[in-house]
Amino acid sequence: MPELDRLRAALLRPAGASSDFDLNPAIELPPGRVLRPAAVLVAVWRDRLILTKRASHLKHHPGQIAFPGGKVDPGDASTTAAALREAREEIALPSDSVDILGLMPVHETVTGFSVTPVLCHVRADFSPVPEKGEVDEVFTVPLNHVLNPANYALERRLWRGQWRRYYAVPYGPHYIWGATARILRGLADRVAR
Image 1 (cartoon, rainbow, N blue to C red):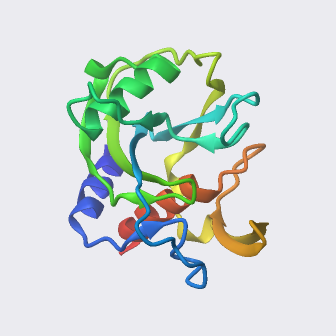
Image 2: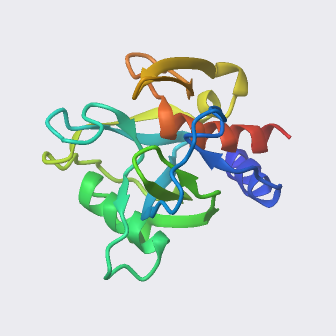
């Protein structure tokens, strides 16, 4: 698949830092902050990217578009193992149907997480099943849509009394923004070079 070759080549190119703060240099980060490790699965399936809509009743980020993923647990052997476990739990993706392409730059979130995006290819068919406690919907977006830097807009909103800028890459009824869009924009920039 030519898209996989483009992604593999992109992973070999240098990558810049990725955080919720890189578009907002005026925001001062607290000294001595401790980040919690997390991992997400950036999964390509049939020339499309798998995303989820988080459950609307969740305390953190309700209804937002996200990659399958979450906190790294003490029992996880690695961040890759954590991302695969979370994808199994959240969307019923069998780990043995996934080929890992590589790791993307760690992304620091405003909520205190250090997120490792794990880029992978889902080589087998599967039927996504949203875990009702965490996921309202599983959907896909054309890979070419999120790999095209021209599809991204730079937007802003008020957060904790300060204007914060962020990327958004809407698709149909789905508003993909924040950390998810920032991680994807970093990948799109590397593919475009």
